[in-house]
Image (tube, rainbow, N blue to C red; front, side):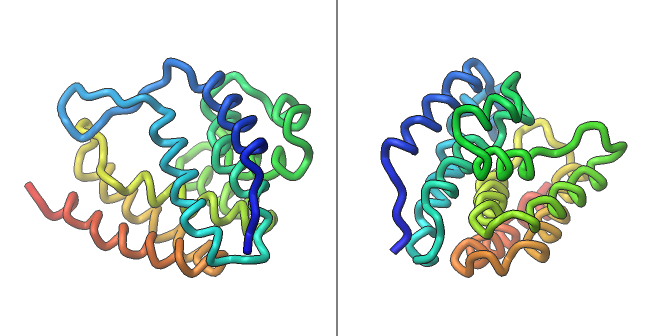
Length: 187
């Protein structure tokens, strides 16, 4: 059975809490703002749910990458800082999960990130699956149909690229992709 350390979890959670402090995202209701840590905790929860289905997985790598997956992309934390606090495997995983904002389009950024994720251990792939699952719960109130459709299509791309990492997460992502269609269809 895949094991993970509560101490490693607590260390990564404290780091994520410190660096994501004050960040929010739009909820489903007009004007609603949700603490960003809700997303971080949801990704970790999805991952922890799936870890027992992959007994050989490195639980600490998976959990730490889940909790830290957005710190380089969305905060002032750097790769070097993550490396210093969590070591090379976690830092490499978090960096692979970070989109390269220097690339000209969202599609190019996603393709590049998926390519880098696929060069990492399956635990990092699992984090990206868990991340997209949580991002498909419900779109923010301010997204238009074009953005929702594009996000739905991007979810299919992620599924195709990474579904072999974990059958449980792949099945859950597939289910969320199908359910997300309701946000495209309703008016």
